[in-house]
Image (cartoon, rainbow, N blue to C red; front, side):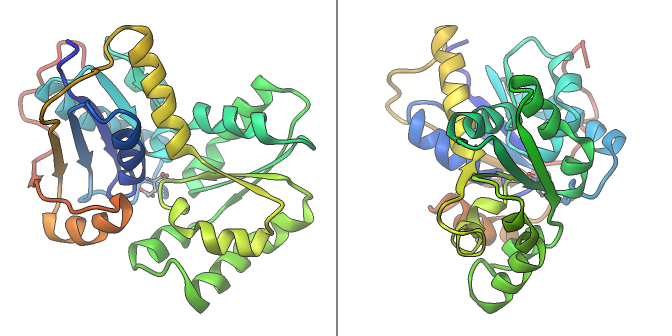
Length: 275
Ligand code: DGL
């Protein structure tokens, strides 16, 4: 079991921000990543559709054999983590709880902003999670649907990025928040512009880092964390053309993406009895 890879999935390329942190924190793990590039974006779809996609992605990762699932996508974590968890008997880590915990550790004035896709924000999952952990917290949310295409186009700085970030976040400044959760895989790439707009006194929470830490802690706790591995493997799967994933993905991962394979999802013969 210990030698099995960690499975990570996202709606597309954005989850590579989580992979990047996982590779840093757990360098001896084999990693299998699935980016559902044929069906991205998830952030504008209904809970039912996102849940179906999430189950199909999980099924694919299980068919490879994995010891843990990391749901790198905020949208899936917001609307489908319970459904995925209830269908597998390995640990499932999402990005929302680790991000919420980090925000609560950081805030001094108990006013936290959360930005994400429409489906994430409309689900109120971040709001619920934060309030559950600390009922006195005030949460200010904003869906920023243009951020994903902006980042996918490589517009992570400059005039256009600044205009779009201002368009969504100018009002956030008036809420007096001291902490802002970047509740979407793509947003860490806009960190510099977001910081310029909301001001340096607002701490930006990047759930990728926190999620990788949470995953490592769980593996350690159940004694499945690898301490050695002479040649850790990284396999990347996509549901659409590998070329675009490779070129955009290298920006997210910060290193070259060599092994990218295209797969067909849903699988014709699901392996798991439970699914
Ligand atoms: N991965 C999604 C998220 O973190 C962003 C891209 C999408 O909408 O599919 O919410």
